[in-house]
Image (cartoon, rainbow, N blue to C red):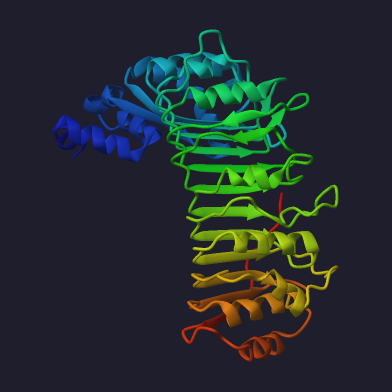
Length: 412
């Protein structure tokens, strides 16, 4: 039966072996003499070992590269010490084999992978993901990644002046569509640098400190996810957000207490005229986060969907009573709002007042979806009876209560 299968057209056999994955493709050599070297003729292969316990399979990389001359499309692995010693040579081979997806991280949770400069030789990359890597300086004559579409850097470390290295990588990657920076570290004091590109559509930034980002020309940008613990410290956070004014989807965290006690957002010099979907990681216990929520809503006149994810800090430190919150509401605010999801609510007075305002003023409103968190200030029955008694500006408005939130939202 195995010999009958091998008589299939070459393209069909290649497709079968490609679908079963590299490990099983190599195992077919045990089927019969006819199959012994068939996998070596594959036009392309993937080294795809996404789980830490699969690092043992990297022992065979040298042998596979020697026996199979085809293209390597993906190299995705957790690297242990023996693999780290070989990664420089592997990257040189991968660069000649046209690798397009590279995902590297150390196998140990607390380890840092010293990435060799040969990674910059992989010019056909379309997807580059690095986790817990120490990034080397750019080599002389670096020409960029002309085909790179996705760049994700999480917990990576740059040397001093690494911000300029990042700027150059982005600037020399004209096809770049998605940028992810999660806890990127740069040695020394930051200097301002520019993120810009003609095709960048999505930016995600999560950081415990300001790294000097400035948004340049981003004509294709439509989605952003922003979580910066210190809100740029001494720099103007509102000015930074103005760089995202043309996006249609925004996820932003405003629940952190400003380190200097200042208001995060009170006024914006721009309108988010295209914004249709807004997700807020926030809370209604302190004045800065409350004002930031209303500031964003006032400046998103065409908003249709609002998701609010509330953490477990249930101590209400500031009373935002009905008169105060009503003063934050301006004419035309939430005029197009149709859907609100509130996850992790504690039934605090400030939260209830916000719900009452939404229901009583949003004329096109359709659905309020609620789940509660820990340490609620009243029973679910009392809270829902109170909400059901609120006046509704829209006759189509419905309220869906789904009980306790299944996920606790916090910043790791």
